[in-house]
View 1 (cartoon, rainbow, N blue to C red):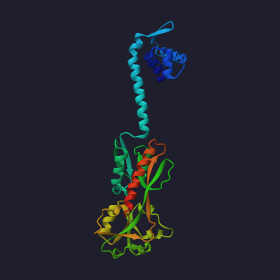
View 2 (cartoon, helix red, strand yellow):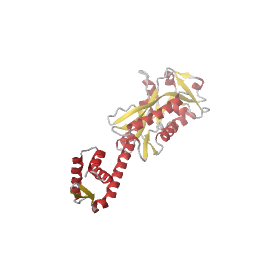
View 3 (spheres, helix red, strand yellow):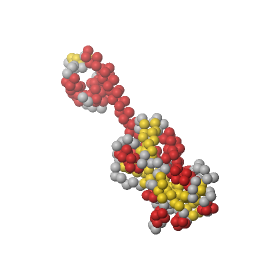
View 4 (cartoon, rainbow, N blue to C red):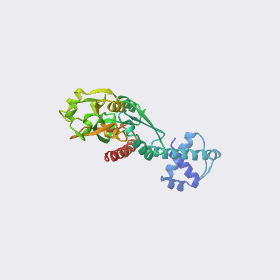
Length: 296
């Protein structure tokens, strides 16, 4: 059954004239007449009483008219809702975030989310990179934020921001007197870092040997920070993670000719109809974070 045929019937009853109904529906009069007959055949009931060239609404047609009008309203509402859903998700939006990003970006993430998706609820999942991609692929997450690039054909990725690393030492460490440090100096000191950090550091060619004597302690950056505070260990910290931290306990030192950085990307499933909306959201998040980074 075509909703268009129902529209022809309602238009006919509205005007009680085949020609005027056909003009409203932008079809020829014979076409409208034929389609209404087909509708009656499909339903197996007469909607009209035909008398020569005239007609009247049958008792069954009179009974069904409100139902048909309601069906057309619901179809119209369905189309309107579908159009809105093309540009606005519904319900909960699940976002995966890798642990080393965590709380350092949550303020910007929540603020941008509230503006972009005022009618939605956000649910954050702090998961490893492998689990994040798996959950994203299964549809358990709508978005993923992680250090990249990933270059996976199943997902689309957009860079949100890039941040440099600084060196953190406690305030009693000999290096704490320096404002800038050369990477080669770190060969003489106890370098520790998270387990995932080596693969995320964009080291200059030839500088990889610096990591040879580094110890991987934990995948929690705050654990690393605690160890730096209370020992002679030193470590790299992304700049965002130094905001609001106790600078009375740790000295953060800039690195000479610093190309030591990490790039953070937003991942979306290939073919997600909300991708443009999510890209816009990611751009807002990246803009807020970059504004903070520019103050450092």
